[in-house]
Image (cartoon, rainbow, N blue to C red):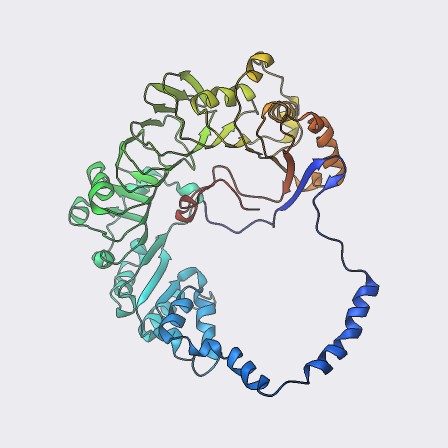
Length: 500
């Protein structure tokens, strides 16, 4: 997911039947509040009558954390952001030395901007007496501050480093080809952690064949290559040989590679956002998630062997030149051109459409007959433009309703009750017999009781095929269907779920 500030906290409301809403309990009446306040002196007075030995027991209970070993406390501190970890020094004399000896969690973005952050990084590394857990630096420093980066990486404070991230600034990680061609190799010290790293984000550099040939990340589980120049042979070597335990892989804006070939017995999740022409999943027996944060208009994906693939998306219907091939089944854009192979393992699908079209979804469900969760979004147009669109020629309703629909969850983004949206939502409510929930993401101005009741009537909730289905609403959610851009998203069971 693209890094940025979080949007306002999303709200949620469910409608099961007319007049039945799930809401928070009403606030306590004023009289009850006053009564509770009057009881406070009584409680305090009673609490002052302590049995013999109670005070000693309470002190032992409050000081129980002091009995925890320094090693465990250090591990806990290392999980905190830099600023909060440093603040633990003022808690007590026992805690004063812990942060400087705990595994270091140093994120450049967490340093104050009031003074030179590069100087602060040097000072922190020089003063730290423990080992390193996580280091996060701007990827641009590899090019413009190579000497400083080299000195930092050689610091004893980073011994046994487990997570190294060179993050990249830029929308969708795009960059001109000329810029990519001018990238320089990273300092050699970046590879001294090859035996301990478990997470690596490498960006804004040129990985040469000589560097990659001897590279072995034995412990690496998650890897992201962003805005990187690398040869096709070297990339294949990293995936199939250099990282024998790799589980999550993010490839974004890769220069020098026309065809990406995936051969890995351990990979569980792949995120792909590149201008390359081909992605071939040759042998990935553990692959569960294949994600396209942003697909190239002419991207060709061929899945030869991925027997555990459960999550797929986001498939853009507007790119008619893109293809996804399963065996001899061809999905062009989001339409089935040839259906001879059925993929029963796929249970979660995310798609983009010019307008909500149940014909497209039903065709895709013929290819993925066990589909349980659908995330759908219309391409970026205003609600007014969507309302002015003319209805397309749809397939016969009776033909569509005769198909078996196993969907349990449907999420519709940017819902504003246009003709296509209402028709799409109504179709699945009336025909999905095992549906549990349909969530409509609405604008903040439509998040009100009147709009909820109106949609309840328009979508014919009383006639829904699944009596247990619920109609839910969210507002203020900024989690894009195509927003998966971070390793943490790739490691999620459902990367398209905003969690609101």
